[in-house]
Length: 107
Image (spheres, rainbow, N blue to C red):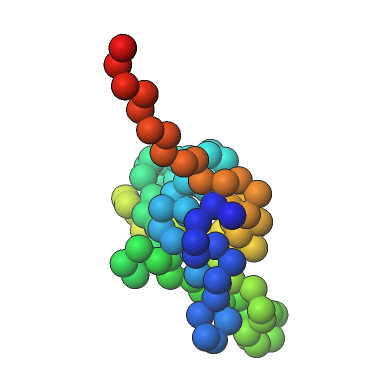
């Protein structure tokens, strides 16, 4: 797994996704592009500390379902776009975080 926290959940069952893992996901799959409302280039991931704030999805009747999403907010106009966390979690479990390699001593 990509980090010690991937696959963990809160006591209420909400997935836990670290901020740096979410950033790695969006950068590596190139999901972050221009805002389709104002064409700005910068989005922020909504977080509490180093853990992403996730929102629980609802069905067409307003009932909570066992599905979560992560929100990105445009820095310029405030547009909020959402991504399903199950896709992010799957990618993180299949894409190990690169490990730091020790630099070899100079000869």
